[in-house]
Length: 161
Image (tube, rainbow, N blue to C red; front, side, top):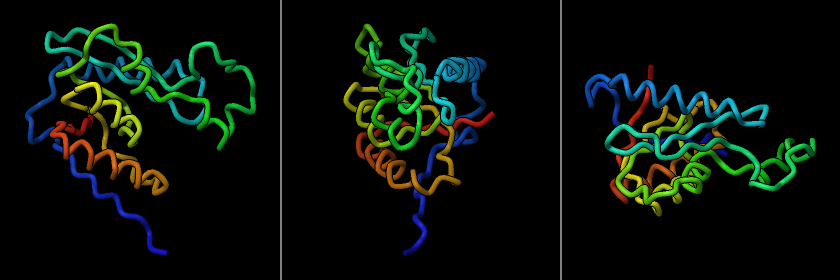
């Protein structure tokens, strides 16, 4: 069996000019929100911002509202995958306005499930780091997310400090 290949190719900072102080601030917010996650291994934060540089919604990977997150077994792989909602989906779910045309800033490349939510809600730009190339188990999901974003015309912008 051959090693899976990651075929994601994102717009880079060089292609878009220097990131603004606001871009760095929003990624800092995503990182701070990620720190709220009770997941011991993966801490993801997402921020949805509008064209006026206002934060519309935030989300981190965590349990759905009302689900007991104090049960240790629910934090272990593979069981945790049934219980944790992803940061991007939480940011979309908690937005109290239509987010069509807005930007999502996330500290991790979105999986296919999250990208479907991004597309369905009309987000037009996703600013995130390049996918983690040390995780071949995620390549298929990242590739599918990338393909969907390209089909829809979403602008995927690689963030690097």
